[in-house]
Image 1 (cartoon, rainbow over the protein chains, first blue to last red):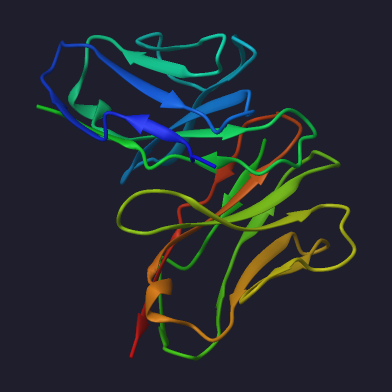
Image 2: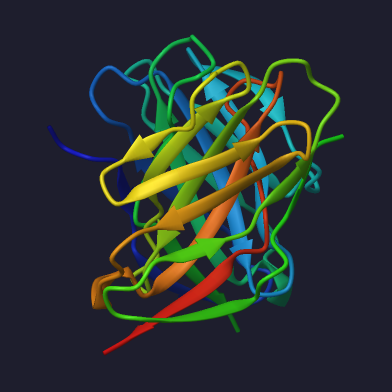
Length: 114
Length: 114
């Protein structure tokens, strides 16, 4: 059974650019959530999608957006990149409810903003 | 609001010894789940163990056990017979009433020495 696949694994951008990250969940998983990990702030929740609808959202500016497709694959986009957006972006997926389901993480996309 | 506290930034243990990683939590949700994840230097978050707030017995998964003390709001991870491959960052996380969202602690860097 394939795991959670995140692409690209590494990328370098400059300030002001935008970036799109992709997450392909485990087959049958319909919930996809995104986290940002930085040394200063730790792991912070960005948003969660379920059946193509954003179900929950963290406290990030509108420059951070996401979407989910009918096959459950998800993308997140960061526009007008800032130096502080440099981070490891982790995607996590889970089956449908119940709420006790374990989130399975991908290997992450490491973004460097110059 | 949900909060996870890990007070040990770093821990050292000799191979084959047991080690306890501390985690305390705070929540007003009557039902919640507690998780431990391992993050090696590669970045991927690896699920280790889960404890539900209504579970009567402490969870165990191979060499991992979770010492759950509900009244003290603590969920310590115990790793028995440490191995060199256990060297990694360990995160305690909690899910409350918000599906698909985990709240993470700042992590504990575990180093296992021969």
